[in-house]
Each structure stands twice: as C-alpha cells, then as structure tokens.
Image (cartoon, rainbow, N blue to C red; front, side):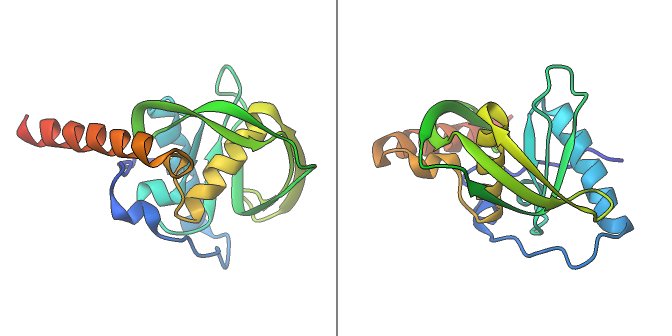
Amino acid sequence: MAIRPILEYPDERLRTKAVPVEHVDAEVQQLVDDMIDTMYDARGIGLAATQVDVHRRVVVMDVSDDNSAPLVLINPRYTPLGDVKEPLSEGCLSIPEYYAEVPRYLKVTLNALDRNGEPYELEAEGLLAHCIQHELDHLEGVLFVDYLSPLKRNRVLKKMQKRHKLAQDA
C-alpha cells in the first residue's frame, strides 16, 4: 500500500470524467488500498480515484469517528430518495483549507461494487449521503466549488493559485 499524491484545484485533470471499471482485479484492489491509505493520511472522509489521477469510477470513504468503517464504491450510482436538499459545510482534499455550504439530497440509495467486485446497495442519509454525492461528482469532473457563485469560486481559485506559487517558491 502507498500514499498517492492528491491533485489540487485548479488542476485540469480533476475535470476528467472517470470511466467504468470493467473487472475488479488485483490492480483495482491495490488502487482501493492505496486510496484508503491516502484518504486516512490526508485526514479526509472521502476520496475519488480522479483525485489521485486515476480516471476510473472508484471511490473510498469513511465517515466514522475512528476510521473503522471504510466503504469501497466501484462503479457507484445513487438515486435521490425525495426532492429535499439541505446545505452542509463541505471541504475537499483537492481544495485544502476551504469550506462552503453545498445543498445536497438528504437521503440517497447507493448501488456499487465492493472491493471484491460484489454488488451491494445501501440507503444513506446525513453526512454519508452528502459524502456520496460529493465524491460521485468528482467522477464526473465536478468540484464542490462549481456550486458556488462566480465571485466565491474566483476567490477560491486565487487562494489556490497563491498556495501553489508559495509551494513552488519554497
């Protein structure tokens, strides 16, 4: 297992639409293991393969308090359960140190394959439902800042450009 570098906004590779996983094999399982390690190392609760520059439909997440419940989502899809959305403060490992309220569906049904390629379904609400929607957006090349006003999005872009310049100069 390895810690992989996480792409940061405004890296254009974050806009790449992920392709479905044809077969869950040892390579995909290694990717999953690396992503879980990377997510925990970065102190995140979710990570899409797109964020580690692998453009396949793979997501890992763990919304538990003690990192004891990692979820693996291969070729995930969700269906909203109802029309009600609620805003929740979101952050992103690809946009460090920035948080914003993003409205998401309160409840969803998730269909995915697990680490072994077995299909499963679960109903999610609250933080887990928000996390599922956030991470699946990554697979479509969508970032949570895309839900913000142009003014706020531009402010985030400037912050991230400054952050990258400081890192390069160091």
